[in-house]
Image (cartoon, rainbow, N blue to C red; front, side):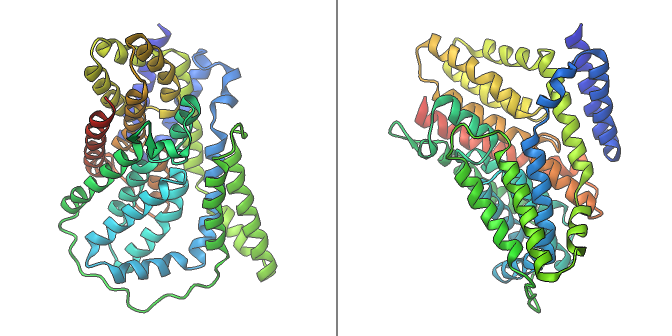
Length: 423
């Protein structure tokens, strides 16, 4: 009975988020409160359920990005990209590929918060709607998250569980790793973007060049990227390491600005720029996902996937990849991947085969599946929140128009590549 109630509440919450996007925070928090009141989510699980690392990363990066925008560096970068682009379509494609490249080495949410301001600056200069460009930036960042050991939390989880190092994602046991599957998928999305944005052929030009007022925020953002990559090589580090790095750099940036200007105005503006709605929404989602995990719903989904294809490796692989895409479109991929890794280990050991095909298939489906819906990945939530903050509402239709073809194309290419080299 508990499972039925939890699943019903989760479905109702999701429907409410689609029908009433401006009230989605209330839908999520209301569901979390009901979970607590009904005992679906034990009170003792509340604090552990919240991913403090992501919340700290978001908070620190939001502050850094505010200083980054105020320095006019995004506008300067926009001028450069405009000079290199033939039209609006190619600007969108370049921005998407740029965000994907960064996301292969940096958390997806941090990538969106770093690159999206450049996209907004470009759209303001061209006087075009920023929704398509920012959504493309978000889904591209999710796409590349599985490319390296440090690109996404799920990649880090797989590396730790399977004892893989950074190089194993590129070349492992004499075969190309998942990096190449992801990159081929990214290249395959270029024709998709050319089709989606085929009408955006307005010529572009930068015009008068913008001058950067301060390089400190750019330096601290680059330092953040370097430190996040470096931190990935330290096993056993605290779970909030990346978040602490982002927050500390935000504090350093505010202090340096104060010493330079002797004014606290910029710091107050940066703190006021925090997107509290997105932070609250993510917190609520963490609690709801923990609730359906505690109810055993994720375990049931995982067991059903394995049960369907356990006698045939190709069927099992296909179910793992595409089932993971479907599940990750609606629930956080972190508890799902954590649940599935030991399950796949047992299944492959029983079948007497290597587990890496299924590991990589799981990572591909679970990482990319979040692009099917606006709440399937934290980066999507951050992008939608940033658009709303700038006066642009994103409908469910707006998102799936870009997210679905991106996801299906990239997953299919990775699916074929991994089967070819690893079965």
